[in-house]
Image (cartoon, rainbow, N blue to C red; front, top):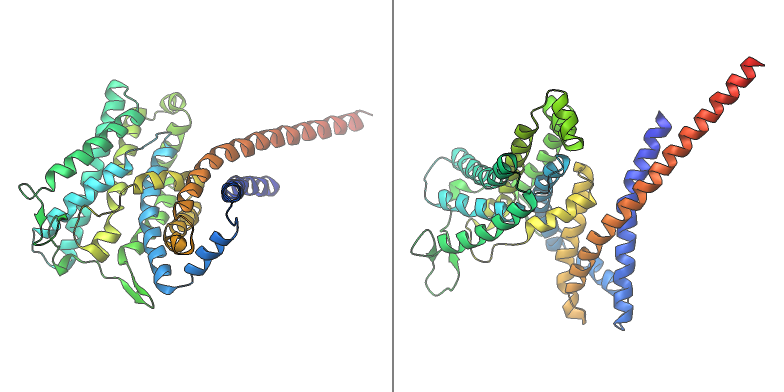
Length: 368
C-alpha cells in the first residue's frame, strides 16, 4: 500500500513537471528560431523578481489567481467546465464595488456586505448555466461562454455615468465611485509594499476547499457524481442537485477573485480592472491538478511570469514571451497528463500481472 501511494504521488508530480519542462523547452526553441538568446529572458525575469516591490505584486496576484483557479477546480471535480469564471468575477466585483461605495456601515459589517454581494452575484451568474444544464441539458461550456459576453456588455452599460458609473473630472476612465475606508480590508505592510489582507483569506479558502472535498459527505457526493453521474444516482445522490450546487459554489468563489485588489488597493471598479483572470484560472487549475497545494504553486508560477516579464521589453525582448509560455503550458499540460495517465495504467497492469504470477507460483509450491 505504501508503495502504491508513492507511485501515485510520483505520477501526480510527473504530469505538471513534464508540462513545465516541455513549455520551457518550446519557448526556448521559439526564441532560438527568432535569433534570440534562449536563456537570457529567464535570467532577466529572475533578476526582476529579486526586487521587493515585484515580490509583493507577485504574492498579491497569486491570491487573485488562486481564487479564480479554485472556482474552476470546483467545477472540474464535478466534471463541469466552468469557462465563465472571468465573467462571474468581473460582474461580481463591479456590483460589489457599487454597493460598497454607496453604503455607510461599521468596518467589519461593511466588508462583510461587500463579500456577500460578490459571492451572491457570482453564484447567481454561474447558477444560470447550472439551471440551463439541469433543466434543458445545455452544455455549461456553451452557456458560460455566452454569459461571459453578456457580462462584458452588461458591465459596459452599468458603468456609464447615466447608470451606476462615475466619471472623474479630467479623466476618461469610468469608475463605480470609491468605497469608504470602513470598507477597506487591512493588509500587511512589508518592505516593497502591502500584501493585501484578502490574499490570506484566499489561501485559507484552499484549506476549506480541501477539507470540504475530502472530509465531508458533500465532497464525496461531489466527487462521486463527477466520476459517474449514473453510479452516483444509483447510490442515492441527486445528480442534478449536485450539478447546480457545484455551479453555485464555483460562481461564489469566482466572485471573490476580485476582492483582494478591490478591498486592498483600488477601492473602486474601473475600466482598467484586470480582465482574463478567469481564463488564467483554468490554466492554473489544470497545472495544479485541482489540488489546493498544486494550485498554489501553479498560481505563484503564472503570477511570477506576469510580473517578472514586465522588464523584458527594456532589454530588447517582448514581454509577450511570458504569454507564449503560458499558452504552451496549457498545451503541454493536456499532452503530458495523458502520457502520464497511460504510463500509470500500464504500470498498474504490470503490477497486477506480477502479483498474479507470484500467487500462481506460490500455489504451485504449496501443491507440490
